[in-house]
Length: 329
Image 1: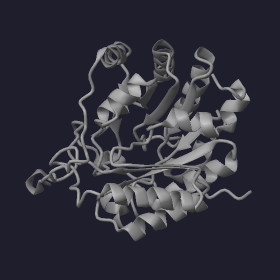
Image 2: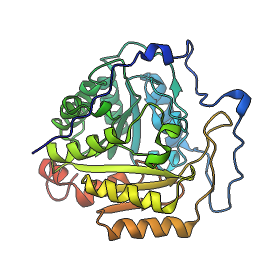
Image 3: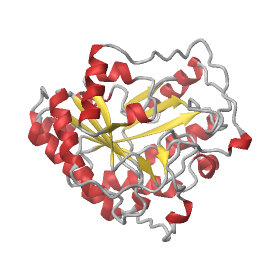
């Protein structure tokens, strides 16, 4: 078995970090005006007793969810159905992806107690499916991978039956960092490609398409029974042919589950959206994904990484059945 090894040159990331963490991504003098949303995209503001209770719990445990930080349009629906996505390794990222609404800057020291707090929150919430993601921590050679492994193992101790998905950074293509996570055997290993190669450096300047390829293909080689998953945003200026080419690449890397959603510009200081895809175009991409062999495809304007993730696990995961039997608790 040959693992792809991709390593980045050592960067002086401190020079790239603003003194005060910020959500801004584009020059304020060159503001990007958001397009008017079409009638088929309606985002409900999260509300209700369950949402308020869980939000209070997050604050009491000093935790962050990507649902909140990235203003996910499905937050109310997911929290109500027993799925939540936790943001680990702090809430300040070392990269400046132009679409992202998570703060960028110099992060605080790694909090090794965070894994325990997240696991305890998952238990308190009695989640059916927990998604663990993180900011990038490029100042660390392991990218924070040990904390992913810690939280996977601790959730299984505290709440057997809760399925676990990790949405990981690329770790700059490091096999060693990836193996730390894979050895803990999450049901789903997710890494989002996000966009097409032509737009990579505009959309995510510090990322690399080859690192994404290495991360996803190596994950499948390290443990073929762990489901692999990846996502694409559309509406950034890519063509349909380019999206389909990325989908073919993802299948060649062994990706099992694909998510495709519309990019929604968080503010005027983020990357501008070029156009909205129609429902017919999302259907075309979903059908194409199934045609080329993905086991599961979610393609819809408001689809995000964790959408319907619990259902994906119960339908497809060998790891979950090995842990909890055919019925899966």
